[in-house]
Amino acid sequence: QAVNQLFNGLVQLDSNLDVVPCIAKQWVVSDDALEYTFLLRDDVYFHNGQKMTAEDVKYSYDTVRDKKYKLRRRSLWTPIKEVVIENPTRIRFEMSFPYNELFNLMTKYMGVWPKGSREPGAPGDAAGANAIKKGPVGLGTGPGMFVKFVSNDYVEFKRNPKYWRKDIPKWDR
Figure (cartoon, rainbow, N blue to C red):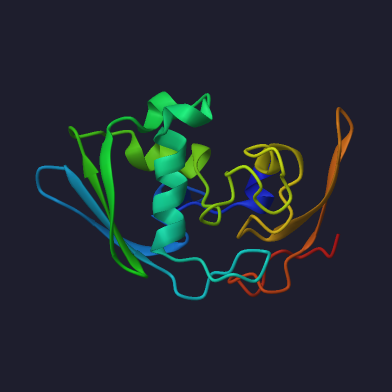
């Protein structure tokens, strides 16, 4: 999927389909499964050069749960009661109830984007909220940086030279 070239999630699936760390280095789930605390990597940067922090994670999950954005997958995230920043590299998800699907959904349906990037007038999107869909220049943390999108034809990426996994990707464009 093209989106996986642009965006990283907190967790991902490995080749055995086990949930493993991605931009979260590790996590702890409370015994009652109502709190998920993630320790974030401190070497992840957005394609625009901005360092990724817990503020960006909170913004991303708050945005996807906010009705004003009318995002299709909003209902997947409504079991999250609150996202709490503990410090720049530590974030806690407080759940309304135990939600067994949280990790699986995080691997497929949720990346992290910069704080403020979905707002009207944000860089690359004067009208607001469409930059991620139409022209996400500078918004991702993934191995591929957005170059060009031609509807019903192709999406062009270039290699992210500052990607935190130094051996990925193995291509330049």
